[in-house]
Amino acid sequence: MINFLRRSRIFHAITANCPISYNYVDQFWRTADYRCDITPPVIVARVADHEIRITEELVRNVLHFGDNINDRTDFPSELIVGCFMRMGYIGEFNDS
Image (cartoon, rainbow, N blue to C red; front, side, top):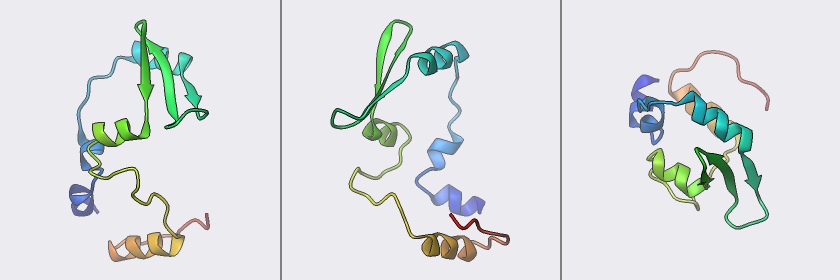
């Protein structure tokens, strides 16, 4: 599983060591608003008197996913279970 994660697009996202200011995180969540009435949809918040706008594209770029907005994001459960089994996963799978 570790080797799979090292080769995956999410490796940077799960291993980056970023300093966190809990005060800023609190400010973000207290003011965050999801705006789906505009294109592209955006999360808007205020942190340290600055407006923060987060889009799907920004998340993809910052976390170095290496994909684009047209890439598929949902997969049939049979495909997901098959991938886990090929990685050597042993255990139960949820029905959802």
